[in-house]
Length: 197
Image (cartoon, rainbow, N blue to C red; front, side):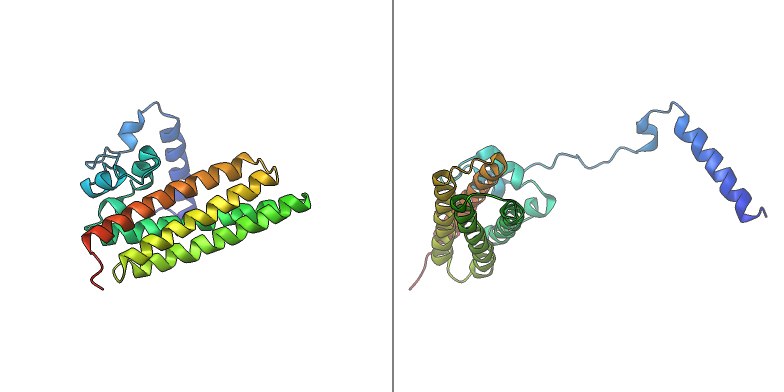
């Protein structure tokens, strides 16, 4: 048997020759039997066609992960949507916290602080709604609507302070899209499970 150093040398030579050879990549990477673009489930398509959806294309793309597509019912889909909303709010909060560290005017700082609080509220609300979807869809629907009001207030403060950061504007727009998806799913759940009180 060859010593380990010789085996390593042979392996390196083999890999070098192999990587320089003009083989097509399809010979190296076998084709998968599963189609790569994941098609939306009927549940997702129905949701993204709802009245509250502000951007259908965003909705379909945001809900295109395998986990979301595999959702078996509206409640499961709702939980996943709320988790996506919370994750997006958390990522946006990080952006605000990064920007707030930079020097700015007192008006801009006040607006940014308002947005930080709005996104903290959004994270808590999305997480809370996720845990309450089954108990009371009507309350969760209201809670998602209030997140929208908080983000609208954040945007108003940014406009008044003349903070025109494209990154923040895009993040706020995406959050509004997540809110519209959250509102649509909670409205759907409310219709499926009318409050009996």
